[in-house]
Amino acid sequence: MPAPERTLERPPAEAGTLSERAANLIEQDILAGDLAPGSRLGIVDLVQRYEIGATPLREGLSRLMSRGLIVGIGQRGFRVAEVSHDDLADITCMRTAVEIEAVRLAILHGDVAWEAGIVSALHQMRRHIERTGNEFREGAADFDRLHKGFHTALLAACGSRRMLAAHSDLYDQAYRYRRIMMRAIDSGEEFIRSHQMLADRVLARDLAAAQGMLAAHLHSTINFVYPPTSGEQS
Image (cartoon, rainbow, N blue to C red; front, side, top):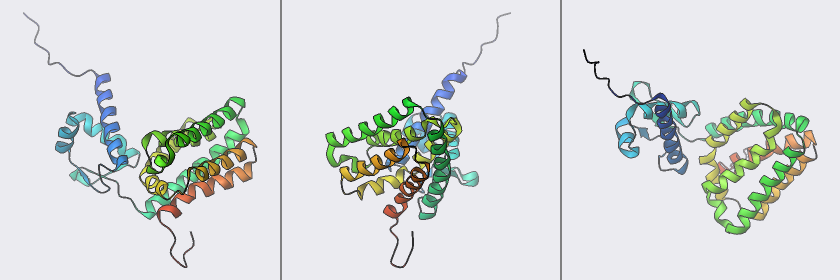
C-alpha cells in the first residue's frame, strides 16, 4: 500500500527566518515614518505590502510588541505605537536606569580593548560627519548605526547581555524621537564635542562624572523634542 502523500510544510528554521524578516521590514518602516504612529496594521494589508504569509507576519508583529514599537488592540489586531511626551519620558527613564548601572559595571570591569572600542566608535562618527556634512542631522539610518555603536561601546564591558539587550531595544524605541532631535542640532562639531566629553569621562573612569553626564545626555532628547514652555522645568 503506497504511503499517503504528505503536505509539504515550511521547515521551522525557514519559518523563523520569515518571521524575523517580517519583523525587520515592519520595524524599518515604523522607524522611517512610512508607517505612521497610531496607524492600524491589518494582516491582509501587510501580506500584500511585504509579500510574506499571515502566520510569519503575526509572529513578527508579536516580536515588535515585546519591543514597544507596536501595541495590540484587543481582538482587532495591531497598530503602531503612538508618540508622546509621556512615552519618551518613560523610554528615557528606563534607558537612564539601565545605562547608569551598565556604565558603572563597564568602568569597573573594562579593559584596554573596551577603551579602544570607545575611541574607535567615536572616530567613526567623527569621520562620517566630516564626509557627509549636515546629512547626519536627518537621522539617516547609516549614521544612527554609528551613533548607536558609540553608546553601545560605552557599555560593552558591563558583562550583562540583558542590560545590553535592554539598551538596544530602548535606543531603537527612541529613534522616531531622535530624528526630530537631530534636526535641531546646530553643528556636527558640537555634536561630536558632546560625545567626546562623555567618552573622556568614561575613559577617565570618573564614575560620578560619567554617570551624571550620561544621564544629562540621555535626558536632552526630551528637551529637544518637547521644549519646556515658559515657567516649566525640564
